[in-house]
Length: 230
Ligand SMILES: [Zn+2]
Ligand SMILES: [Zn+2]
Image (tube, rainbow, N blue to C red; front, side, top):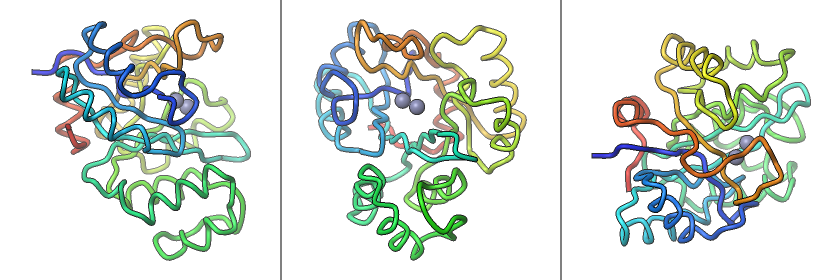
C-alpha cells in the first residue's frame, strides 16, 4: 500500500541537481513511496528511476513537465503516462524540438497528430494538452497558484484532467481551493514539491515530500488518472 506520493520532481535529466537514483534514495529516506520524475521537456530520467525504485521499494509514475504558453505567459503542463507511449520515437523527437525551441520543425511534425491552434512559436496550452493526451498521458495543470490572475480563469476553462493543488509553499486555504476546484471541475488533483536541489535558492521549490498525497489521495489519483505505476 502506498502512503506518501510526490508527483513533481526534477532530476539532472533537466535542471535538477541529482540523478534519478539519488532522487529515489532521497525519497526512500523521507518515507515517500511513490514519485514522479517530471523533468522539463524530457523523459530521459524515467528509466533509471524505475530501476533504482525497484531496488529499494519506491514506485515511479512516468511523467513529463511540458513548456507551453498562454498570452505570452509561460504555463507548465504535467503529463502522467498511462502506457509506454512516451518512449515512442516521434514523441521523443517532439520533446527534443520543444527543448531546443525548434518550433518550425516541431509544428511540422505536430500537425500530423493534433489540431494546431497557433501558426508558429511555442506550444499553446491547448496544443500541449492535446499533444500529451495523444501520447497517452493524463494532463495536469502544474502549479496553478503561480499563474497570473490575468490568465488563470481562462486557463482553467481548458480541458485538463486534473490540477496540481498541493504545491510547495502554498498555504492551506489555497490548496483547499484548488482541491475543491479539481474535484468539481476535473477528475483528480496531485501534489508536487517541484524539487530541484537541496539548498535551492529558488523559494518556489521545496524538498521531496514537503507536500504529498496521502494514502487515500493516491488511490483517488490512480483511479482517476489511469497513470502507470512502475
Ligand atoms: Zn513548472
Ligand atoms: Zn517543475
